[in-house]
Every structure is written in structure tokens, then in C-alpha cells.
Image 1 (cartoon, helix red, strand yellow):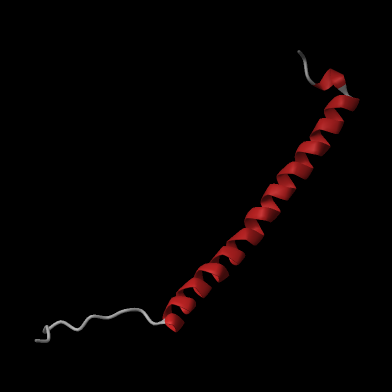
Image 2 (spheres, rainbow, N blue to C red):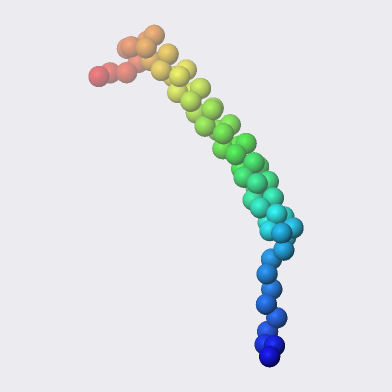
Length: 60
């Protein structure tokens, strides 16, 4: 006896396409996030050098 509902299982290619979308979104998000983290670390190093060279700028 067949059921009235047709069972659908995702095919290999649709699953691969779904994973491909995730990879593309991940790469597109990682570029600005990684760049902003690198900029923050660079700025932190620059500010630290300025603070060490001019200790009078920060009052303990």
C-alpha cells in the first residue's frame, strides 16, 4: 500500500548546492571581519607605542 504523501529526500547535488551557499557566505563574511580584526590589532599596537614613548599622556 502506498501512502498519499510522497517522501522527498534531498539529492546529493541539492545538498552540495546548499553547502556551497554556506561556504560562499562564510568567505564573504570572513573578509570584512578579518580585516576589521587586523585593523584593530594594528591600531592597538600603534597606540601602545605612542603611550610607551610619551608616558606623560596617561596619568597613573
